[in-house]
Image (cartoon, rainbow, N blue to C red; front, side):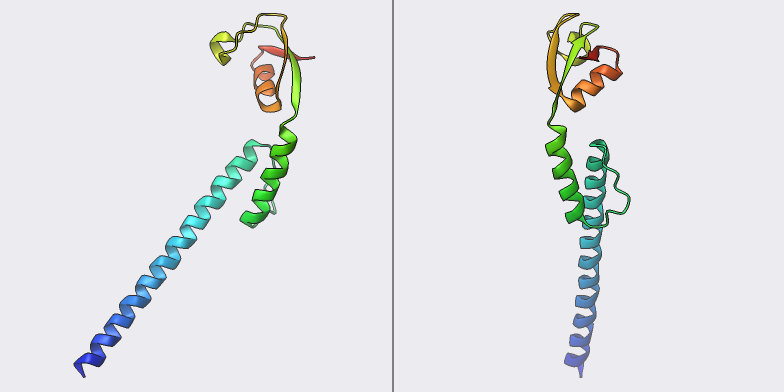
Length: 112
């Protein structure tokens, strides 16, 4: 009889442990999904309606490919201090869209 009770107790402990593992896996999945959402939003992707990590990863991959486009800018201020670049006023150069937009928004360059 004691053996049966011990087995029942062990089964209950295993069930609790299993539920904890399931909860931990769900939390990790939710954290990973949130990280992907942040990454997507940084790329300018509207994440409304995207419900799976797979779909989110595909959207990020597609946006990353298209964001690899370069934009030509002309510097209106010397960017050395703020951006660590050795260009002078009037210099023209091509940059990834994200960096070019950042320099334009900060008033250091204009789109050519």
